[in-house]
Length: 334
Image 1 (tube, rainbow, N blue to C red):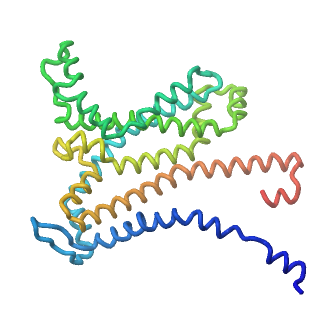
Image 2: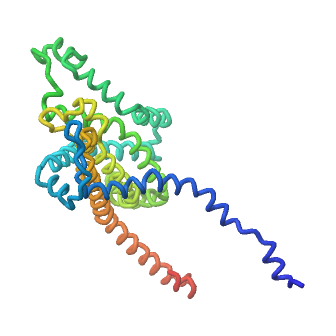
């Protein structure tokens, strides 16, 4: 006969297999649609594979030649520089305005009215398709568009300005569109981070006589760092993948003089011309750049945050130990 323990063990049900069954679709989709294409991209980047008219050249193994050609040509570097400039032009006002709005909307002292309305309004541009948004601005700033007509009728200019034929204005328009589309999303994320900070810290700072700017830089910003790092990294990744807005504005040519040619536009041009080997090398380089920048930003910004958290934890530990309220077990765990 079975013992009581063995019978109880046999009757117990393991639910682990159901968990694996429920998460299996995600892993299957990830392997089929992301991991396999990623590995094939790395593989194809070492081959010469393109078309000349109707003639197919390759695939022929060429080793690192595709990477050497990309670096020596300079067009990849120019596209990377264009992407960086446009992203910085849009991200700096985006993060500043988002921080300002997040502090205002979460301030108990201001207690702004109609917060739900303003949150909805600032988030709405994020719901519009980027291509449709780009077409709207393309019409607004066209030679016969409303902007030129207003400036002409008010006597500010004598003739229409070709905004999309000037590098600085073209980049500024693209950066402004990115700012308009994403500052609402950034504001919501930063608001969530600020609301997660314990309110007693702000009250203590006010009681100690700290000014609003001091509270922001000494309390809010340091404790908001994890969310801020997340916003910076995700925005940077989105900036590296910038495609639809400059593609529509410049009609896929990166005009003027390819000063608005981004990395993904350059990659798309290679894919359109069936140069799969070089396109694979571009994809790998974009992946490496994204990974290096993300790790660098995280390490540089979170280093101070982690050290401050350790210092604060040690101070709290010493304060509790001095009060004699810490047991031996709690002291070991701390």
